[in-house]
Length: 247
Image: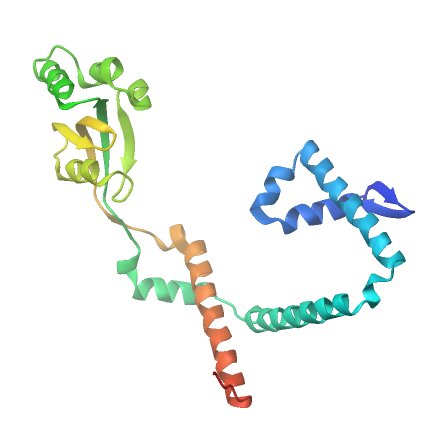
C-alpha cells in the first residue's frame, strides 16, 4: 500500500502512515478521529509538531541543561518500561492451560439467573392503584396500559424492559422482580423514579457456560494473571540482588 504524502514542512514529508500511527497510539479515543475531519485535525497536529521541532533544533534547545535533565528522566522511565515489556513478553497461555483451568473451576463460569419484565411507570401511588385496577378488571391489557399511562420510553414496547440480571436495576425494582412468579403483575413498587407496576414475563435459570463461549476472555484473564506474577517474581529477584532501604 502506498504511503501517501499528505504534507511537507521545510521539505520533510508527513505521510498517511504517520497519521494512522498517531490515531492508533490514542487507543479507543482515536476512533473519534478516524473521520475526514478528525484525520485533518491529526495532520495539523503533526505539522505543528514538525514546525516546533525545527524551531527547537534551530535554537539548540537540546543542549540546554533543563532539556538534558528531562531527557535523562524520560530515558530512565523508558528503560524501566522496556524491562517490564521484556519480562511479560515471554509469558504465554495455551489453549490446554485455559481448558484445564476451566475444568477445575467450572463453578466460576455459571451465568446468573435473569428475568424478563415489563413495567408501567407513573408519578404516584394513587395513579398506580388506579391503573392497576383497570388492568385487574380486564379493561386494559398490561401492554395497552403501558402505552397509555407509562412515562418510561419502554411504553413503546408495551413496557418491556428485556432481560436483566441482578445489579442492573435499582434495588427496590430488582428485588420485587426477582421475587415474582411468571405472569404475575405487582404494584405499586416505589423507587426514586416513581411508582411502578411490574409484570414478570419470564424467569431464566442460571446456566453453565461452554468453554468455547468464554475461551478468549478466559485466556486474556489468565494471561494478565501470569504477567502480573512474572512481574512480581522479577521484582522479588531484583530485591535479592540489590539492597532496598525504605525510610
